[in-house]
Image (cartoon, rainbow, N blue to C red):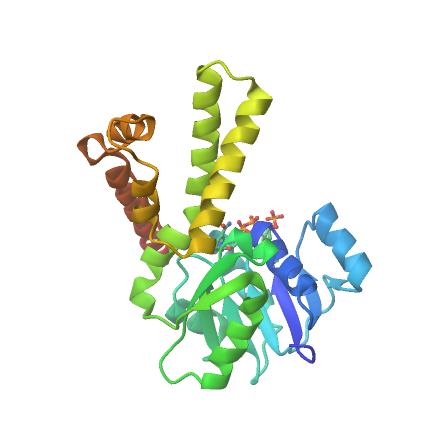
Length: 267
Ligand SMILES: NC(=O)c1ccc[n+]([C@@H]2O[C@H](COP(=O)([O-])OP(=O)(O)OC[C@H]3O[C@@H](n4cnc5c(N)ncnc54)[C@H](OP(=O)(O)O)[C@@H]3O)[C@@H](O)[C@H]2O)c1
């Protein structure tokens, strides 16, 4: 990516996570940031790395669209000013389909991706999809662009993107909620607020690391810490009562996927 010029449209939570990922990678692309209200962090990154904020548009190698889906239609005319015949467009917007991108941006060279926020530290997973017939080179360029953020999966069928959004796109928030809930439960059992927050966070981070480093199946790791008649079993009896937690997670992922589909149809 060293020789590529990337214009990133929208440097909010996800856009700035992408920028941080690129800046931490060895091959630093030339980056133009298009953002009406850049954060202090983005401004500092621009100063430190010589990135342009809101320069005049010109056809560029890659345009990454990271505005909210609801803002896309209004922004499309300005985004199109960055697109030439050779430009590859990478959209990370949830719920904006390839056919809509094609129509509003006037190009066929489009890759859609669903990254997630751990990408800011290189631990993300991004799933991509592309229109039939797109050059393999365009797909591998998009994958390479997402690589500093972590693993890249796909291309997959676009019809599966709502499910991906519900699992990996929104998934980090489910884990953060679990940390908050565990900390709250620790406090309710009489631990101090600070200690509860640290204990809950370190437990989730440690468990995730164990899952990653051992490569063991999550169900097996769970069974390993669940002895018959023990404390974990007592807790899991509550979480699995009436299929409680798995059914709640299924419902949550389905709601996220439905929301993605609703955004796709302009609701
Ligand atoms: N957050 C996630 O975990 C996640 C995961 C995967 C994908 N996504 C997708 O990533 C996209 C961005 O999400 P986000 O959470 O980063 O949203 P966000 O924090 O609101 O960032 C969007 C940024 O775009 C700016 N913007 C609005 N209109 C613009 C325009 N015309 N030109 C340039 N910039 C403009 C916004 O500025 P103002 O605030 O001033 O309007 C804001 O700073 C969304 O489409 C979302 O579906 C998010």
